[in-house]
Amino acid sequence: MKNEALFRFLLRLGDDSLILGQRLAEWCGHGPILEEDIAMTNISLDLIGQAMSILDYAGVVEDKGRDCDKLGLLRFESEYVNLLLVEQPNGDFGDTMMRQFLFDAFRKPLYERLVNSSDKQLAAIADKSLKETRYHLKHSSEWIIRLGDGTEESHTRIQNSLDTLWRYSSELFYSDEVDNELTKTGILPDLSGIRSEWEATVNSVFQQATIVIPTNNWKFEGGRLGRHSEHFGHLLSELQYMQRAYPNMQW
Amino acid sequence: MSTNEWPLWEVFIRSKQGLNHKHVGSLRAADSTMALDNARDVYTRRSEGISIWVVESNYVHANDPADADAYFEPSDTKIFRHPTFYEVHEGIKHM
Image 1 (cartoon, each protein chain N blue to C red):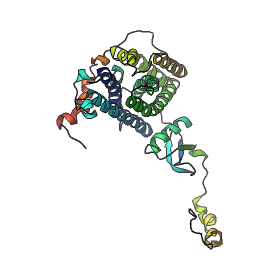
Image 2 (spheres, chains in turn blue, brown):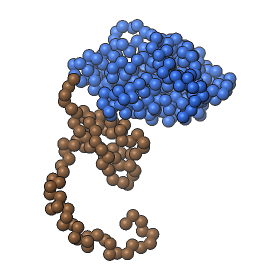
Image 3 (cartoon, rainbow over the protein chains, first blue to last red):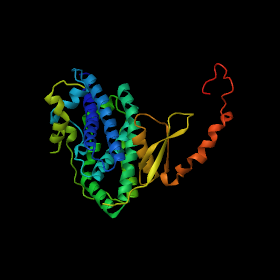
Image 4 (tube, helix red, strand yellow):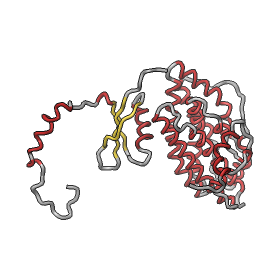
């Protein structure tokens, strides 16, 4: 392999998109209103499209003949390196929007930096994905504000969503030798400003939504290293069913 | 569950620069921001547009279909209002 750090970075990026896309797809036909059902499946398709470009490129970097289908649908549980946040169950609509918002607010500044990567392919993927992500963030922010600053019931429920999901937010900023290596070799631009930008977005939206960040500092991490929550196996069994039951099938 | 329905909105899409916005359908939304987002998701997902207008259906006033005769039939006999007596020169499009 030419560049193992780049391969691992691409897997992380691609798995986040793939798994969140799969989660959102579970809403298909179950959205609270028709328009929102379509909105969530649109976003799901955006994310799965991103995952396809990213994982295809990961396969090229790995150079073992694996494409996005092989990487996306045929790895074992511990080989997926997505954030624990994105694999959390959909819960109610508010839980789904909170999960989405915490992720979108991170993804936008990340892509804004990746467009300046010295790796042309990565920069091109980021450039295309950034436009989609800007809309995702607009959509999820509006819902957080609407629900938080809505009725007593919607306020209580979206606050509960935040209380439940907040513990998965620190992993967004997980960083290790993969990032260090890529920054050193100039493939990754400086990513250090992402956290403060994320915090500014999150604080501003929560303020408008009149909800508050929980004070409890209990954090869950592990997804980046392949350690997943109990929900993940079930998600994979659905995601992988076709390729496992009918190997190499296409349509 | 609340029985209050969100207001209905009419959606107009401009498919490309220079063309008019055209009515494409309607949807329900709590306010104009949500109506625009919903219109984007429902009506432009196959790249149908570059601009969206939404108007609350309440504000659209329509003629009474019962008056259709009085409204529209008189124009049927005024063929001189249609520029069909002129020859269109070659090379002139969209006439």
